[in-house]
Length: 529
Image (cartoon, rainbow, N blue to C red):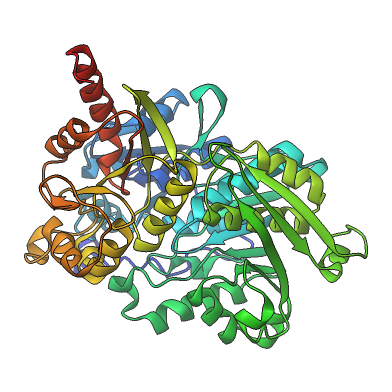
């Protein structure tokens, strides 16, 4: 094809297009260039390919902790995206945040270089392995991290050194951080399966875990029906079991639509009983019971009831099993996440007791209820929650962990479209806190000019119809402050000893924990107690 003909061909980036055959291997990639290599998901894949011996490089718009880490491994990272960066590349990898007019996409297209979505690389890494995917509107990172942790600490033989691709990092003892990507020698790959762009339809896992299917990313799917259908399709690609919650209406809707043969090899975990869930369509129910956290105990305890039929499948005997579990991470949502991870580990061959013991030592994925520090009696916690249901679960967990504290929240909405679509739901979730400041919206792949009517005030306005038990001295419990630096300092000024402050959101709000701690320290040094 001539250059003129190539230039006449429109560039279409379709994340759902399958790039590789089921028997393809990473050795077919050649030199592989990642556009936006510093992103959480992209950096993990780049590192995994590097560990597998692939010649990897990439570019990003700015420096960050991920680009620094990749360079430390010997991976070349260019800052700034320009045509010359793809010179010599055999494969160019993009994420859904990259647009067709990106100069590196244009250059790769003109030169006839193979252009693939990040999901194609993850699907390629799954080939020839026992893959476990973890999908859901929320809980993906914690559940996939927890399963990886269980396999690392309790797995034996082929389970002992799993590969994992997680869109984040994992907390380790002493404040250390473990990266979310590793190419292990074992035969298992644990992968966080992002549903935001529909690309998880490419994966063919042995086990598919669905933590929930609450409607999200409707900018891509259009409506809840298409969103649900995508999860049904994903579950249908599992060659073995499907593990999903029964406490979420979206997941139950997925269960209702599964092919009968898939439903019969589905395991449903829930705090509800069968009568409350309704027709299980032949699925096996695992019940979570007696879940609680004693005040100030720092542990979340519950019992997982595994029926004899499933215990037998997992090689754990032929009797019902009551498995006690104690977690360091708080909240009912994490009891569910841990149950999903333990069940997947059991299906892979880890004994129930060993899985539960390993889960008890898990400190959490980074930015999931992560304590950033304490200053002047005030605790500062960071969390990635960016969907109303996630925020509601986070604040429920906060009340359980800090029952006598004032809970203050600095929330940065993620995406204009999500803010507009769920403004009232955000307001309802945030009303579980005592004091809230909503900052300017983190746009990610969107542009403000396309949503001129959406701002932090969109949520604050929606909150006017939401009842709230308490209010600050000026009569309000929620306000909008676009500048998050200013908002962080305002929140710090209102804090008193025993208060807990949460920085919440999927954007750069995480940096405000340090700002709040510094402001609290400055107050202390000035004698403001």
